[in-house]
Image (cartoon, rainbow, N blue to C red; front, side, top):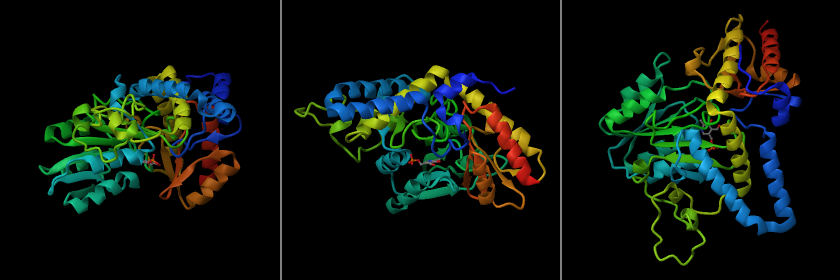
Length: 383
Ligand SMILES: Cc1ncc(COP(=O)(O)O)c(C=O)c1O
């Protein structure tokens, strides 16, 4: 029986999208919950009526976001969080900032989202050896661990794969990194807001995730967590006035970049998105990341269990609960995924195509009846 953290009325109030649509595309961009749209509406009204006169209040919202964001990583220290424009920026901060030495190698997934391949591939120009790894379907972590050697400085993975939905065993990877003295960098955009993540438990060094997917906030913002000792290894390649806790002190004598993660924030931030993300993280923390994670897994369980036994449907996402997060992907025998997607859309069901697969990504609030209706539509398509 799938857990329901919200009753039907509360869900429709908080997530207006479900009144008209079945939104199974949180792995792409998510509709905003009511508290997020209210925060955004209020911000727009404030700007329209009095411009930046409310700037002091905006800074308070930013401060609250900094205080709440560590909770996504099972942490408490705002100093370890940087607010960046997107996930790609975080990965590039690491790729461009680390003191690479000629002959170093970097291990990453050959079929990862481009943002988590291109920065590592580009290091070839510094004499760093990029090592893209094709994952073994039966033991994906083993392939990554086996590719690490004495020259390896860093392992970069996406904790949840954007197409197959595969969730890696981060604890096992983190242990291997720590054994080999390798830095561990995680793209968690398909993870944060969907499932809890304890960066100490998985021994991560750098973790970044954008706001517009499972975090249910506007585009144009990402939270970047870094472990202090690992952060100290990164050169500040983009310095700027806003790196400091007191950025308006233009008369400071010492412009040395601070030790905190603010060192990665050179200039003016996306204040509109900050208002949205502050509201969405508050909502997620209030509902509990553990509860959200198990409600979401119940939903991907439901889809998986119902669809795996249908003749003519091939699941390309893992069937084991511990190997999944919010993504279920599949192929229908003899049917183009484009056609399947068009049929779903006609039924008010919004999904996506990645590779040759149809990708379904509900969230913790998705009504069970909507999932059952989706299963029925897909069953009919497979006939
Ligand atoms: C695994 C992964 N990494 C990165 C991105 C892109 O993130 P951003 O646009 O925040 O850089 C995506 C977007 O789909 C993704 O799925």
